[in-house]
View 1: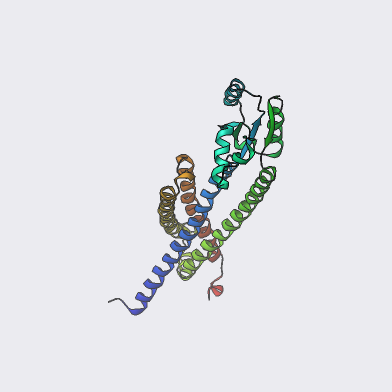
View 2: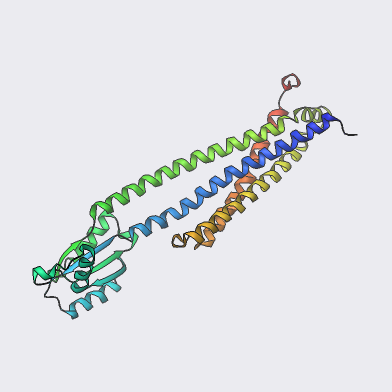
Length: 291
C-alpha cells in the first residue's frame, strides 16, 4: 500500500516537472516570437521605405515621346522598384475628388503638370542614396521639379536604427532571463533529490553515473517544453498569415524552419547545461551542508 508520504513525494515530483516544462515553454515561446520579429523587422522596414514616393514633375513642353522614353528609362534603373505615370488630367481629377469642387472652372486652365510617382528600392531610401538619385534625375532638362518627404526619409532611417539597437538589447536581456528561469526551475527539481545524490556518491557511484539520469530527464523535459513552444509559435504564425497576409511572415520558409530549430536546440542546450551545473553543485557539497 502506498504511504501518504510517497503520494506527497510523487505529487511534488510531478509539480517540479510541470514547473520546468512551463518555464521552458514560456521562455522559448517569447524568444521564438522575438526571433521572428527580428528576421521580419528588415522586411517590414523595407516595405515601409518602399511606400515613400518620389514625385517627378515634367515641364508642360515635354511631349508624349519624352514621357514614354523616361518611363522606359526608369524600368532599367537599379533604384526603381515601381512607378506610376500621372497625367495632369488625372491629377486634376484627383484634386477635384479631394477638395470636392472643380478648381479649373474658376482658373480657366489646368495648372498641374504631368508627373511620375516613383517608389525606390529600400536600399536607396537613405539620405545619401536618395540625394544621388535626385541629382541623377535632375540632369534631365525636361524635369521641372522633384518632390519627396525628406524629413520622413530621415525619420524612418533614424528610428529603424534605434529600434534595431533596442531589439538587440532586449534579445540579450531575455536570453539571460531565460537561462536564469530555467536554471532555477531545474535546481529546485534537483534539490529535492540531493539526499539520493549524496547516498549514491557515498556507496561509490561516480559523478558522471549519478549525473546522467538527471541530465537525461531534464533534456526530455526541455524537449517537451520546446515542442509545446514550437506548436504555439506555429499557431501564431498561421494566425498572423491568415489575418495579415500582406506581412508575408511565412514567405521565407527556410528562415522560419531555422528559428523553430533554434528554439528546440536552445531548449535542449539550456536544460543540459543547467542540470549539469546544478548536479555538480550537490555532488561537491559536504554531507553537513545538505541540511
